[in-house]
Every structure is written in structure tokens, then in C-alpha cells.
Length: 240
Image (cartoon, rainbow, N blue to C red; front, side):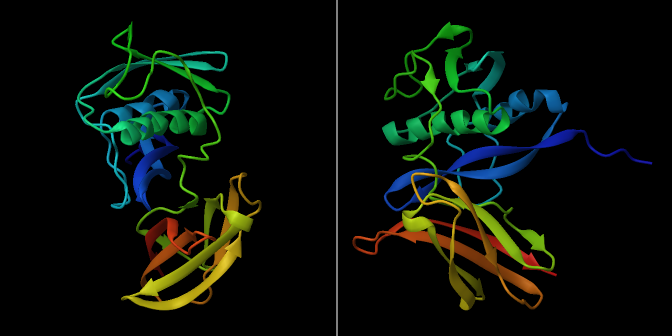
């Protein structure tokens, strides 16, 4: 009888376009290996160029980089990597660093600071724009995390009752949503996250009664000033 694959479900962060900027979105990935190595395994997948599930996201790390080791001492993690090519601008370099920071925080909540080494030696910068000589403090991600982030897997299949969850940091905790099929809106509305910004909190969408088929669920935030799009996230889902 075949044995189930050994591994864990971990939250990894990838970049996606949001208005005129890059924001970070979370995905749950299955990583191989012992659960006590989740931090190493998760970071290894990111740093070596692992692909996101959602085609709207990108991994800013390329496959010629790799993780050497992670040493955790108290609330400080020292990440030693072999740096390959990271040919990005200043914003993308910062987001690439934050991909690692928020992945670390998601896997090991006790870690609050991160120091980077390159093949065991100190390093000034990854791509020429951001100073990495000092440890980074993991913050709340107000300027870097997506303001709306669906917490369901791209292409996942939902069973009754049809609900979808996510996390938001929006004005008055408002999260508009729409459910589309073949380009037509079949349901829409607005829900309220548990807390408004600057807190990041969970929201839940009741999708209603749905016929079997493939749908696209979209959530977004617009500017209260001029109505322009600030951030959005979408997932393709299947209904049984």
C-alpha cells in the first residue's frame, strides 16, 4: 500500500501588481520533509525560484539562488543564502526581501528580526538598491502586504456551504466582491472584515447557492478619494 507523502502545508508569499505598485499575496504550499524543518523547506522553495499556484503572482527570486542555512536565536533568524542573479528595481528588491520576511513570520511567529548572509559572509545589498547590512525588523506590512488577500487556493473545489475567506486591511474594513462565470456576474456584494486598517483581519464571504461549474471570485479595494483601484485579488474556483 503506498504511503502518503511526507511534508507540511506552509504559507509562502509572492508578489503581484496592485494599482501602480507591487504587493505581497499569500499562498499555501505543500513542502516535502519533516515538519520541524518547515522554515528551511519553505524558504528553500522561495529562494530557489519556486512557482506560485496563482498565475497572477510572481516569485521575484530566480532559480540560481539557493538557501544554505537558517539559524534561529531567540527572536532573530540568520538566513544564509547563495545569491544568484536578482536583476530588479528598488521596489521589487524590497518586495523580494519581504517575501522572505513574511514567509518566516508566517511559519515561525516567534521570529521578529532577520539577518541575511551570502555564503556565510555579510552582504551590502541583493540588487543594488536596499541596504541589507543590518537585521530587518518584521513589521505589520502596511506598505507591502496586499490590502485584500483571498485565503483560498487557485483552482480549488468548493463544497456546500459555499464560503470563501481572506484577509483585509481596508478603509472601514469594507471588502467588495463579485462572483463571475463566463464573464457575467452571477453574485456580488460587500462584506466587512473583523477590523479596519491599520489592523489586518479576516473576512468571510457567503457565495450563496451555486450551480456546478467554474467561477472567478474577485475582491478589491478602491480609493475613497477618487474611486481608483488600490488593490484586488481573484481566484478561479470550481463548484461541485
